[in-house]
Amino acid sequence: MVQLKANGRGNVLYNLAKGIGTLREDGQESRFPIKRMPMGLIEYSADFFAADNLQSISCPLDYRLWQQTMYSNFGQKWSILHHGPMCRVNSSPQASDIQSDDTRRQCTMNALVNIPAVSERSLRRDFGSSAITITAEIQVAVLDDAAISHPNSWWWLKADGCDINKGLKESVQQKWSGDVDLNDGHLQKQYEAYQKRLDSAKKLGLEDRNKIKDQLQMLLNDLTKDIEFLNSELTNVNNEYSEKLQSRQHKEKEMIKLTWKVKELSDLNENGREIFSQVNLIISKLPTEECDRSVNIPRDLHEIRQKVCTFIKGVVRHQRIAATHLLVFMISNEERHKKPYALPVQCLPYKGLSDAKVRELANEIIHEMVRRGMKVAGFTTDGEWNSLRSKGNTRPLTILQVRSEARAKYSHIKLARLAGMLTPVCDSDGNVTGKVPNLAVSNILLMEILSWKKEGATDQDVFIRLRERTVPPAYRDTVHNWIDGKDETPVEQLRSILAQLEYTYQINAWQAKGVPFKDYVYVPEIHPKAGMEFCEREDDGHILKRIGQSLRQGGPRNLQLERFEEVLHDSKAGLTYTALSGNSHIK
Image 1 (cartoon, helix red, strand yellow):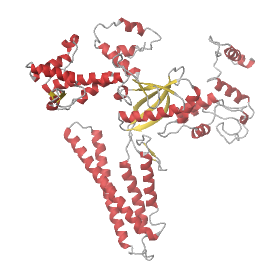
Image 2 (cartoon, helix red, strand yellow; image 1 turned 180 degrees about the horizontal axis):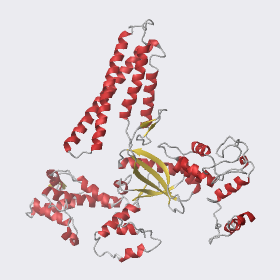
Image 3 (cartoon, one colour; image 1 turned 180 degrees about the vertical axis):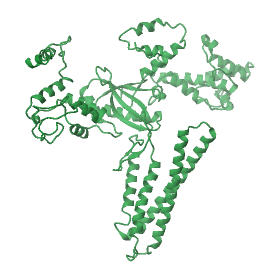
Image 4 (cartoon, helix red, strand yellow; image 1 turned 90 degrees about the vertical axis):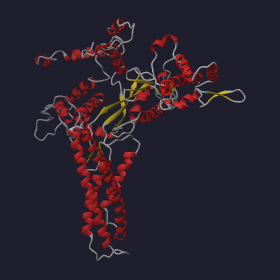
């Protein structure tokens, strides 16, 4: 206390004791958090400066995890600033630095550090021993920890994509980076084949001289395939270059890239043909039976080995697919009481993904979550993959998807076939069927069409009556044509009629299967992997953004805008001023 007062410090010990001893309003936790940072930092700092032997103290887990997070994000610069620019433990020249893990006994009497912390080497060792990997595999360790820490929680799975700089690299240890990897084993197979070819090229003629001819013949076969690939790629790139040049809408940077690619492919093609000729020449020098040791070809083989390795690396570089985006799958506790709100469980570099592939990847993670007893509430994505929110694994999720499928079914059918679906045919027994069978067109409707025709109605009269019947009376003044803003042609009129009949038929069919589309716009399905009701939705921020944009453009009629003002000032709503106004100010 005397030292604190003499140096102008406050009553730190009293305030610390008061913060630890005083409980919060809930009576569960002290005002000063004991179970998390910064308690670990204070504890380790006190132990550090009081210890005569640093081997007798250990870093608390919460402080160590915090250091791992900071080091992984900011690296060595953060570590230097955190420890201090004059970091040392003992003032004697023989004393070791605080960050040395080999020191068995260290005195902190004259230590000069900003904040005591573990060494960089210890942090890197922690990363190396962690169950978290840097591959595209599912991080099962995160799922295990989440399942154990929150056994009764509901979890949301979220997918989000971001852009990354496109580029393929290969380290001196022949490790690849920058490739597309969807965790399907394709990249691993390509890399293994690449390594196998390099190993074969490096061992060419070094193991069994009697097999040199066979090895060279296999090399010729591989070279032939490589040259064919280069010719095909060169043709495609030249065509792309010509098209961009003729369009006059090209960017200079893109044209420069294509020019360099043409140059690289041309040089590789020329080198491949040269190697092919040299290999043929070496084969011609070999005897037809056993290799004659009097023939001196080691020098030629040595030269070929070097050229082939360089050539293989060049060809494979053009066969690899560079990733342009990164897809991150995250899990989030539905309660989300504290950060981090979302935990990454898989990172996939990709170039382009279909909705079906994203669903397949999500189902793999859901399967792993269900195996651990985790309850999965649903899957949320941004605006990239629209069908995920309207079409489930086994059926449509919304009536909007039913309408879309009904419309798509008749979009490309020609007039004669469409008319045949609405043309009644009566057999000898008096049964009425359609000229072109269609389940969506009921026999009752076909009999009604037949009665109209008996009364003298033409086909066009029938189509007009049916078109009017597809729209409820209250909405006939605002009927939407097949293409908005354009009068319907006869074929478009038939498409509108049949699409509406198909929509009604599908709604009734799903209703009979227990899917109440007549009562609800959106009906979640029972997920085949989770075995429970599963919600598919878009990220709330994107929905809110579109709602705000619609409101700024006028919005629906009779909309009570004052209700938005009320919810905007509601602290529990989470609605931001930006979404409604478009301004950067956050309310």
